[in-house]
Length: 95
Length: 370
Image (cartoon, rainbow over the protein chains, first blue to last red):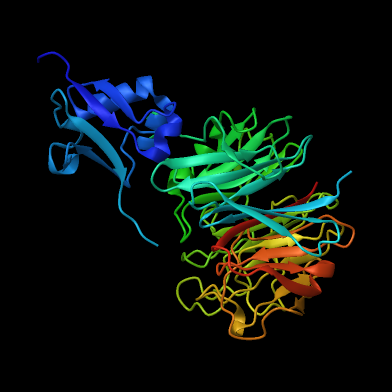
């Protein structure tokens, strides 16, 4: 395994209050799962909005690496490469 | 000196606050507060400087507790919300009840899946109460249509009464350390055994400080016509206990339906109790004509209170926490509907007026005089 890639996490506007207003966070991680683990350590308030008590990504959130939903890749085990953009978005809803 | 009547309204789209001077002629409305997500519980904490609390049940980002220290002009999240320990395996799905505890800043919180949490710092940190959350029955309780919720918390010295749907009534005699199912006489309509040890769909429980030992319960009724195993179960929906909740008996006779959600007690008369009967199949007003029913003799007889309410074509639902009564000398009742109307029943419910008619669906109404 090579050096840990640095990726960018885009923070949704409504969640920036949980990370001192930051719109982007730099995270070093080999996988999406490792990126979330890093988030739990470094931004615990933000992490609680993304994952429930068991560490599972909340049901109505989607995680993207660049343009791809990790559901269509390898899930939380999707590997990251330097410069990847990680985006967490609420699922579309109506009513 | 308390001179304002304040209402907290938990709705599908956030929390609203309404207040009025004591005559209650007109209420000013503020809100919605929160991120536009459902609010299932609110609390007006009148100990010391009044403080308002509201749950904020965000389907995307999880549960929060909101707090207002300026009488509902603004709300902020507390530092944390109740959460199960990681190793527990359960995840918080909703916050159903917020009540004051015995300590200065102590709060109790009932959640879904049915569990109890306690805070000693006004909601900034929470601990799970294992005596009920890890009760031997807990993994056997089943969710009702509203979810598996712990919705009622009543503290009476070292006694604690809990209402769980569907779990039943649980009683602690040691301030919440341990709990026992206490459902003798509480019927269930959705199980072959009409009187199980636990698993009843209790909708709400109420009590009055002046009548130690007496409790009123709105249970899940509407089973008079059941013809399957165990036979019909008429009048299991509205109940009374006179022994601190150890046993219960029906007081539903005389009501148009024993199904309903809220039950409340007059603040100055333990014999006066109010319910809102609903059609069991549709959970809406019988015949399209809503009415609150009042008993002034502890449930022996009932009278219909409907002056000012629609006489026809009105099919809303009033949910378990959506009716309350203030503590003024001549109290007023308040109920909110799933169609977004807030009604006030002046003179103890004798005369009804609609205060607001186009709010989001209302889940909870709480009132206090501050």
